[in-house]
Image 1: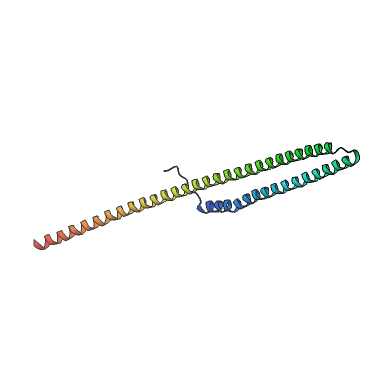
Image 2: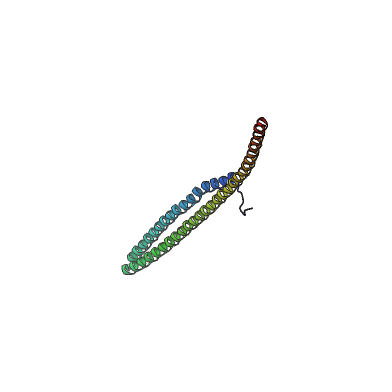
Length: 169
């Protein structure tokens, strides 16, 4: 007896079809996240532009009201720098999240591939064992048949020799 197990080939094929059908969904979700990243970055840039315009408008008002052009420029530059830093931080966080999702999808795909290969090898080994058992059974039956044929031929030879001896005597 071997320690191998027979696997239902139909069930394995159904599982492989399920994997093949679900992979495009997982990749589609990753693409959606990537597209969403671009939308977030675009929104952040629009927000930054609005904040900058508001700061520049405020600076112009300050200039008109108080004549403090230099102070307005400083505040606008500071605000611009802060918005740019915020946008960069959002972009880095989004890229890191997308990379993590991609990495997880690749790991899951590799795990599925390894499991599928292992199951295929099990099926192949089971099929080889079964074929070996069938061939061994056929070999034994053929040996038994060959022995019966030889015994029959020996009896025929003995009967023929007996007839020849009786006819000569």
